[in-house]
Length: 228
Ligand code: GLP
Image 1 (cartoon, protein in one colour):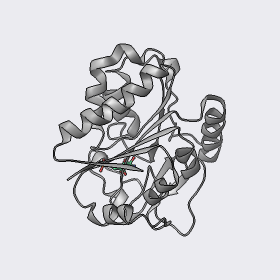
Image 2: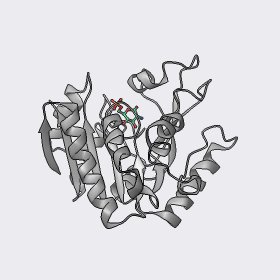
Image 3: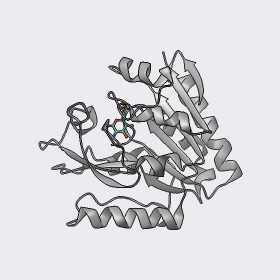
Image 4: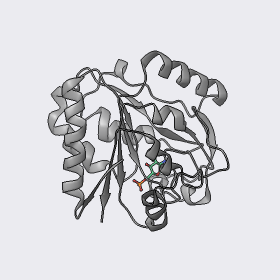
């Protein structure tokens, strides 16, 4: 893992955007996995200045809340606002998750089939959860390899993204750890309050299921950008 520290969000986001653009220039058809949350917002805003490069790029979400009462606050709404619209991604190039599906297990299977067909992910943009999660791969005795329905840790249920929903989700749909680690390039953005412990665990270099992000040490092409 290549680690770089930044003193402001703009410089960190510009650097992350450069990393993404370098890959997109080499492979415009890249499959780009887009995390939500506050960490990558400015990165996406930087990418929007180069929308033309993304004509052929394909987008897959990292995760989605299950059981929101309104579409606002969903990962889909976020991706629409920060990725699909500004980058003018054609509908056919977006592989969204349906968290309202009647049979969520089947939805997971569908996503897994989709990854088999369209994957592996070329560039995976990640944020660090306060408890060290990646997507909704929560700390556990055993991590899940593929797309699954995750029981959200209490800390994850408090994420500010879902503020507008009267129903607080207790579950989420997420790509699994193996799906993430199969990505050719990973960009992990570490910013925001309350992440000291997760950051410390990550930087210790000890791989543990207590902090899923530490598994990124097993990946040989990860850029970790940390806001100090
Ligand atoms: C959320 C999402 C993740 C996101 C992470 C960090 O729970 N499930 O996909 O990357 O937490 O969010 P933030 O960047 O807002 O701190």
